Image (tube, rainbow, N blue to C red; front, side, top):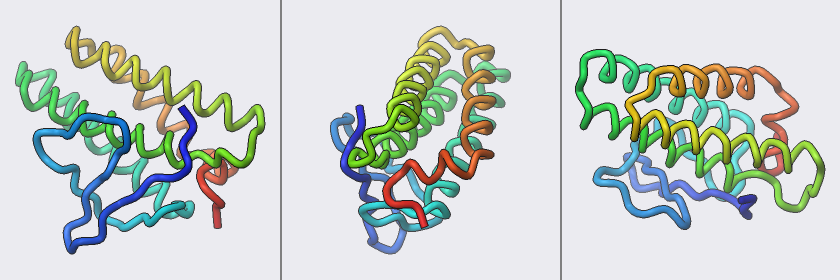
Length: 146
């Protein structure tokens, strides 16, 4: 669902704030601050954080550490939710709609990876996020860009 913007709380150690999602057991720490409408650097940081968490989740999955796998997948889902909320709703274009739908699909695959302990679904999400991250024009669909 396309939102009007994501917010990250600026209280020293930044934490993700996702509207419409239940609270996670732990806050999701971020390395960079993104306020209201994130710029491209903030979007890159969010994507890098998601990719990092997925790599950690994959390692936990391989070792059979279910609780840690779930925690990292769910924190990735929160980041994807923030990216989705940050899509520029004022720009009602086919590209924004497609990226919104792709984020929905990614959320479904993350859920599938979590519930079924499915590394193939996790790997697909990594590929999709890496592709989105590599396309500069897609980053500009979030908020107002640079």
